[in-house]
Amino acid sequence: MRIADFALERYFARWEFAVRHVLCASDVEPLSLVEALALADDDARRRWETLGLGYTESAGLPALRGEIAGLYPTLGADDVLTFAGAEEGVFIAMHALLTAGDHAVVVWPAYQSLFEIARSIGASITFVPLDPRDWSLDVDAVAAAMRPNTRVIVVNFPHSPTGAQLAPVQFARLVAIAELHGAHLFSDEVYRFLEHDRAPLPPAASASPRGISLGVMSKAFGMAGVRIGWLATTDAALRARLAALRDYTTICNSAPSEILALIGLRARAPLIDRAHQVLTSNLALLDEFFDRSSRFTWVRPRAGSVCFPALVDGDIERFAAELVERAGVLLLPSSQFGMAGNHFRVGFGRRDMPVALERLSEFVERWR
Ligand SMILES: Cc1ncc(COP(=O)(O)O)c(C=O)c1O
Image 1: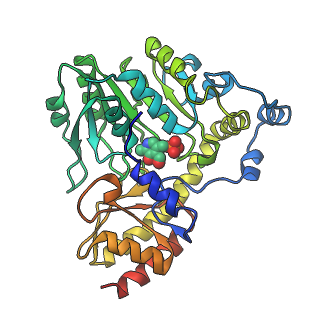
Image 2 (image 1 turned 180 degrees about the horizontal axis):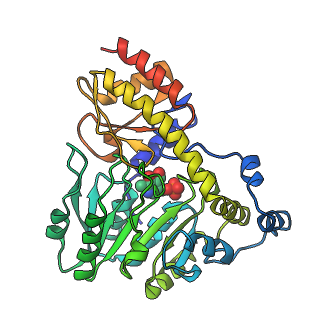
């Protein structure tokens, strides 16, 4: 298989554990193992204490799949397959949906795997860009991009890196476009439950048999390190294909991770509240910062844990390189998304964001 490097992930591999402050992380402050176990109900504690370290069921622990299904109106445990993070779900789904010569429509900018895997399979891609003035999506442009061989529309709302969100009617139109063309709607919903107005969109998997919802423990639930993600869809033939492909990647989940994910999902209400507390207080600081700084512009995010401001003057590559070198603060320039220009991703899900922002603020005062 020939595939281009995943620029953002290579960048994180280089920097994430070598800097003092990751001011561009997309996850929410991770729980410690002790904090997670303290949330366990009696059943989950018993499962944890008596857990065998053998292979696990390839679709995922039935109780875990049931808990995941509870996040979706109308779905049952059988509609859910679990994977090693969202990332394995993306990889498997694209291989299940596409072959060489197929076409995919992808909203841009995008987390690279959302289009790079399709490209590596030999599919052609039409990107539909968000409008940089407010990061809105022109749904008509999605409709116009459809071709007879379009197999999938790929969207990601709440959106990374911009923090954009769709209106429910726009999402309903995307569902209708996919259905009209007999395509699937692959909806990366990894930032679901982080909507700042606390009003999630209907998930794709509940909206249509053509819908596929991607979810994960990494963001709202603060458990990126358990590496549990999932795909939900009522399309049984597709699920069979997804399950068969997984035999060539990880086969099944890590047993301890399944129980930790089960604990996290059963405690979802306090975990989602915890995530919103961090996001709300950090967003207030970002509001202040961008209001008083003439060096940056930004579109205030509406959902999720990331946003995509821009440096007004100067080169963001040089700025980010000097910032990390002199102040130990990591930003993610738009080049990592294959985008020209001076945008950069800021993550505001971490508890050290106030200190990181302070350092950025001091640095930018002196930077020429
Ligand atoms: C939009 C999007 N999709 C998928 C993923 C992959 O999630 P995970 O790393 O939890 O597998 C990420 C990770 O940051 C993401 O931002």
